[in-house]
Image 1 (tube, one colour):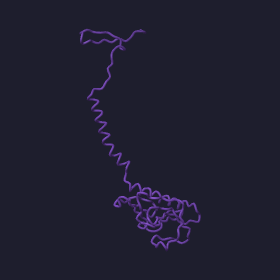
Image 2: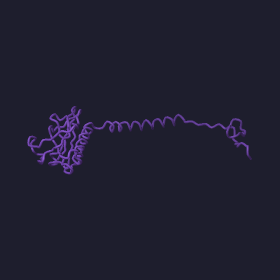
Image 3: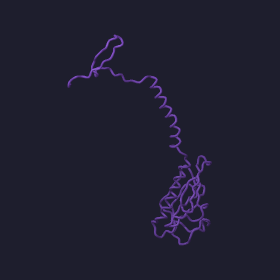
Image 4: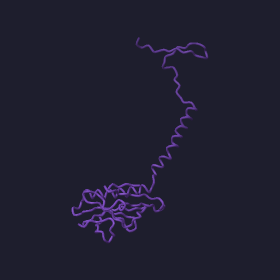
Length: 191
């Protein structure tokens, strides 16, 4: 039965007669009704309306937390230098906040004396700045002139955790602040 076209039978409603025609001649109607189109558009608009505030909140974020994360990352970088010192004579690596609280510099201590966090700045051993700096544009650190040091090869901070905290404040809105804490193990956390 090769060469025979499939035939289908349907009834023509207007003529009340049966019509025989090959299947490829039969009309196929594809389409969407207006109601289906309106429902699909309204569902997509609803989903877009729900997702835009979430996207804006996540993409925009909180500026103070972003600044605090960048400071915490920089402090963690100084701690990593302490784990793997580039300079064999350095006993301590850490960070030093500038007098205006706008700049943080990675420093190293080449003194043999053990520094203490509670010592006055003049009693602390001198530190040598490295070439790495973080300049804060939208915020500043409230503890100007503060130095936080980590022991070479262990990464443990010098002093108590209360001495090893930094507070980041936004320039435009000083009420927005974030705290950076360094625990006894040297882990850096943003709160």
